[in-house]
Image: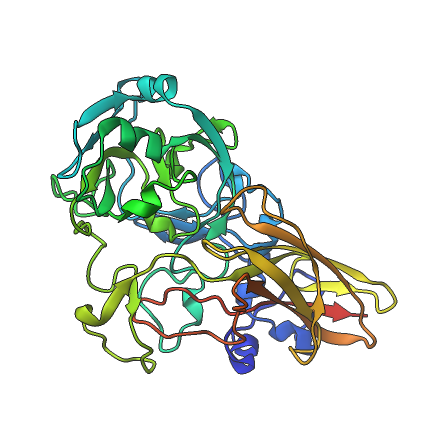
Amino acid sequence: MSSRRTFIKNSAALSGFLVAETAFSGLSSNFAQASMADSLSTADKDGLTVLNDRPVNAETPAHLLNDDITPNSRLFIRNNGIPPAQVNAENWTLEISGESAVSPITFSIQQLKQDFERVNLQLTLECGGNGRYEFDPPAKGNQWTLGAVGCPSWQGIRLKDVLERVGIRNDAVYVAYYPADTHLSRTPGKLPISRGVPIAKALQPESMIVFGMNNQPLPAMHGFPLRLMFGGWPGSTSGKWVNRISIRNKVHDGPKMGGASYRVPRNPVAPGTKVADADMEIIQSMPVKSLITSPQTGGRQPVDQPLKIHGHAWAGELTVEQLLVSIDFGQTWQSAHLGKAVNRFAWQHFDAMVGFAKPGYHEIWAKAVDENGTSQPMVVPGWNPKGYLNNACHRIAVYVV
């Protein structure tokens, strides 16, 4: 959460009922995207805000993430390259090889579906740079606000089962993916991204090779016909359009694995500090976080009626143990009802009722606390060169009448 000055400074008119002379018309534009967002120019997306068109990157306004299971039409898009123009799933193959693979094998999609047990899991997917827009000084990259996150259900098979069929040597360290999208330069053989995870993460029963999303074939923008899913880790590890997986005997060294890419300083640094590559470490589990999805920010609320709050909370590889809400700028907090995750690495849903004693401008804040007792901070944490891991408390505005 940026300073209150910034919250008010980045202002724009809300959805029709507000006028310039009210204090409420100063609400940050980042909290009123529904009326201002450019719609994504694809038929299967609904109300996303386009941040970049080369490559395509688009996020979802918070109120459009109110579904407990994120619909295909509401999941954010994060691309690094140019998606494959034509894909024939019947001819698609997945090669499993690498220095630490005992017996490399190439599978067709049909073989994967026939030979391995199917799994269906709801897994949270979040860009490591979600919330980047709040860092000061600004960090380079897509200026994600709040909506680079979602939690659809995914259909596929366990990565573990496939790796064990191939055989894993004792020296295995990492599992990496290679995608079929094209580098923006269109240089032949140059990959836009190739990342991975340590072998222990790859062997978790929730780590998946995915071919379905919400019981439909993967949408083109989400990796059709095959992708990976590593719940609780930055979305960049969950490669799309995957056609090769490598069992490595070292930490993977593909594009977007070095420098500042998906890495943060090992030790805290002052804002704006230039950090040497040797002093950076790879992001693994994402931090505890929450999002208020209902009501939409900018709504009116009668002073004599309670207001129902709904949202989601997640904590990387951990469980969220408590969800707190405040209507007095964090001076006091009340507990919300927090549900359990449907499976490991799925987000959890919360509900609360709040009431207001006075009319006027109010804010509702949400703060999640994980199983280790770590809570979301009030302000943007840990400045880093690429603006990763912002998990400051989310807040919305309400005008009580």
